[in-house]
Image (cartoon, rainbow, N blue to C red):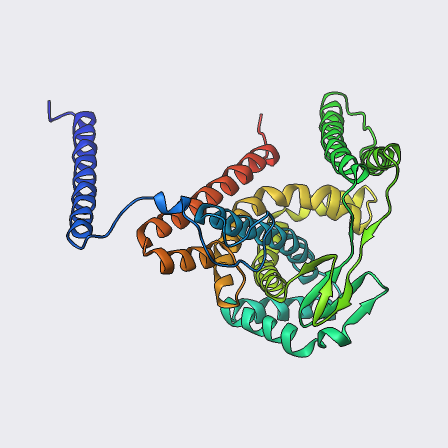
Length: 380
């Protein structure tokens, strides 16, 4: 029986699994014994206790009387928000720089190359300190804020801007925008299916733009077309009213986006260079302009090479957001540090951090793998 390669393979896997389970059981039991000996309580019951500390920025209602669980939720939302904005900005900036590196314009190509080499070779943490210092030291104080009209103000305290006052019209417009985006995506999908089936091309851009603009406007007008704004007004030592982007958020977002964009630029450049030159020559023979060649021929084929390493950069940006604690942005790590210092539940707090970052990374990977499967080359 043991002469069979298949039987030996199964046996080795069973032994390896047993060894892993045995080591895991030993580590867990030893940890629980040591904690019991030192009379350290273990469990997640602390999440229902009152937190008792402030959090400077929050996307949901929060005050110190709320629970630790609520505090972790605030930190999680802050992490997701800065990661999402950073991914969008880094993708756009990195794509532009990657294309610029291949530009026939000598000055533009050298500038893009210098950007990539400069940003990639300076540690991200140092860049965050630099951006934070620039924002808090070079920008004017609140009373001397840089005003953009009467609705937007920039100072050492960050960016303060006007925001629509709560009204049914704005809520309806937001829901209408979500519906319009879904309809635009469905129209684009239907147009591509028709093109693959018959070769006929339906217009996509203008109908989608009309949906995205007209539907929210119609909902806004239907419910009274509210125009009242909550504008920031200088009062005391800071502005009152409106919405604000803190210096910590701005520094973290700029640092993450500009740093990751340098790596994305190289990914984009490599993807474009991977497209056979014959494709470009064929597009030129058809009379396509340079921007049409890039948009219709080169980039769709380059995406199949770009997406896998681009996924890694998205994961890196999300995990690098944990450096926010260095400049005082209240992300998930900052909240976890404060919680474990107050409660002593270090194992639980670290377990929450591990579970959250693992879940976010797996979600990004699944989404990007799904998109990669949609754009991959299907061979007959």
